[in-house]
Image (cartoon, protein in one colour):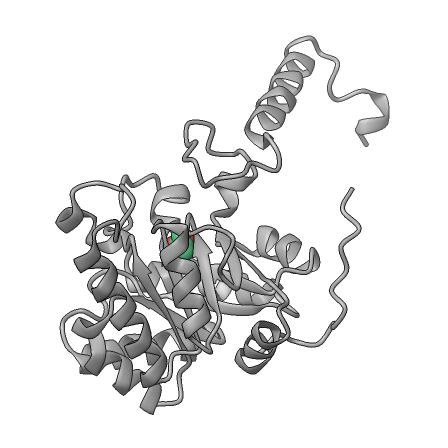
Length: 273
Ligand code: KIV
């Protein structure tokens, strides 16, 4: 049983995340998509909850994040926000809701903030989405950037392999990271890039850098809830640490229930009116 208790019970803000980086306190971030799980993740003391577009995979069963819609993300965001008291909640803008132009990006971000009451949005990309980032920030909406393996571009990459291994891609990533900080993003996710590159970028930036498959030299870590709880039994990338095997626990419990029903053991006399 974990005894972790955050020292500071106040609501986490973008400012407090920067302060955590300044004093060297690592930031714990995890995804959540529904009311019940978000309540548990928040009560555990998570600093940041990401309503990720990975909902497309783990909640809706799609093979990529591309099919999930803005309205579906808003549904998940609203459900999460009803449960969360302390964590900073970030909602992903999904594929197709901001790439068109900066007006579309602003409208999508405003819709998310107005309906979900989340604290911030996350978008994937660097220089190519500069105008959208500027316009969303001008409206007072905090943005978390996302570089490296950006799953919304999976069809361009062609695989989920480690990004920025070569010098050219690493240099572009570094320059995009600096650009996002200069524009005013409050934090940055770096996904599946070499640990040394991620560490050096985290050292250069003043905003917190949160890694997934980016090594331990960054300012915090993020994982997908279903992966780290072992609910997704077939997913074992090198960067993933599984903290439970809940898939097995659930299947065993369901098996016991089925047996009890079949054997007329459930319900017993105490379990009826
Ligand atoms: O959608 C998501 O879960 C994410 C994380 C992998 C960072 O973007």
